[in-house]
Image 1 (cartoon, rainbow over the protein chains, first blue to last red):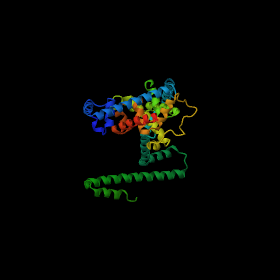
Image 2: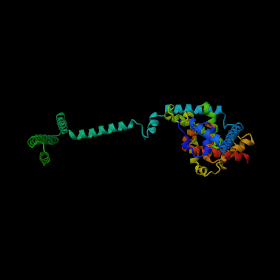
Image 3: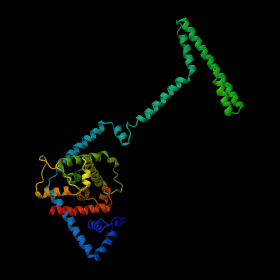
Image 4: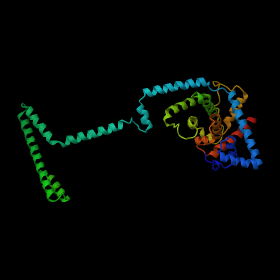
Amino acid sequence: MSSLLKQITDDESLLMLYLVDELPVADRAAVDQRLSVDPSLRQHLDKMQAAYASTNELLTAGDKATPLPVSAGVATRRVSRLIRQWQVDRVVSPREVDEARAAGLRYPWWIYPTSAAAALFLAFLVWWGHADHSRTVQSQAIVIEDNPHADDDALRIIEAFNTQQEEHIQELASLDAAADELASVSQGTDSSRDLFDTVSYSPL
Amino acid sequence: MKRYCESLMRYLHRLVGNENLAEELHQQTWLSVLDHIEKFDASSSAAGGFKAWLFRIATNKANDYWRSSGREVAAKRGMRLVTPDSAPDASQRLDVSEQGMKLRRAIALLPEPQRQVLMLRYYSNLKFVEIAEQLGCPLNTALGRMHKAMIKLKQLMDD
């Protein structure tokens, strides 16, 4: 045990520790040395010892004279009932709430990765819905094939729309090819990329 | 629980001076032990082991009560803590002797920091190093409070 003398700044505190035998061996030896040569310190220790003993006697007598608020047995039984109820509550109540609360989370921990996955899935759906034009054209074509009894005017409009879509797709494909050719010629510099952008986004 | 029940109850009773409150704080202490049992490290070298941890929780419960009832400020000023509001009423069991009542009043007149150290030392028998750590004060301060509490208690009982 390391020395406590550095933490003690007055004789009362030092003697108190000496009195209750809580000084390390080396510190106790140092106090013994001082007591042997300092009678006033010895008197001080004796007074403190008397006060300490008197305090203990007072409190012991007071406890004997003062019953507990409830008997130890009753208090133990009541706490036992509380403990049983606590155990039941933990079974009934979601433990995740306790764990989340302990971790400082507002909601159960599993909600957070689930929400993130759901958000990613939604984002994918939105992207997929906007990105795949060819499938849309195909589905529109299928509508026409599966609906032979559609109104002729409506059919003509749909056919015209499908034709336009196909032409648009073919133009985009040709632009892609042109861009690839330009990129290979200009060795993939920024200027070719700018040229591709200019070509691909020109009004049709 | 049986090992610590009586000393813990008496400690809380001496600390708060109210029987019903002492029992309520006693129950709250054990519930808090259950709620935070995973935080207790029996293998650590922290002072006092389970007993120190138990009494630390009990002390905190008592302090929380004083804080919420607005009496901590009064306690720090060394004023009387037994006010007419918390004086024993007819529904509470009375001390069976005059000496017991006198001691109760004397303990209530001790300043809160001195009373805490004295009660903690007597009922938990923790070392002063452990008491100082638990109360968050220097060792020298805890010892000084103990010394002053002993002297003042003797004076009050001799009056």
